[in-house]
Length: 277
Image: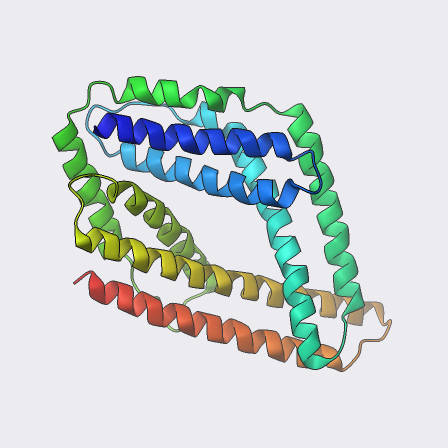
């Protein structure tokens, strides 16, 4: 039962990545493909990290994930750039002003990244990744189900207990790490909740990590856009080409949203940590 569940989970994620890879060369399908590729990649990594805790499990995963790392990184830049332009347009309506230079830079960046993705999809191969489920099946063939379930469940419980609310003066890097760890834990809990041994508490934790991860993701997107606009404004000032006073209003609006998103995330993390008691 356990071996079948883990293998099927991995095989499904690998199939999603493979199908998405084939769509990267099609401009109209690219952004959806990038999203599916990123989700599939996170599922694969979360499962392999969880399986690594099992006694008797041995699998060198690096050779299977090399191409995936490259695609995930470039795909992430493409996804973030597109979201930044959409969010920027939304905020510009609030201040009734368009920051044209910022849009131009974002469009140029997106074009460059998409061209890179298209080129990579023609040059790279994910054939190695498609063999991962078979190798994984062999790696878990001799594990003992009850022991594996106990170890994986305890590992997830430990990770959940180690989530904490950062200090109010903590740098963004601490929040970024928390975001990534929470997302990985969400995917691992999605595996645990498929086991017959899972409890109502596991389902609650799954929902907590999902909501926390989503809020931290919104904060991350807002903070990245704020940083980009600040840097762009600084560059324009250095060129002495003239910069509208409206840029200050735009930055103020972005700062407000970033602060609000961080506060929302902090409240959710507080709820999550209380549920771990």
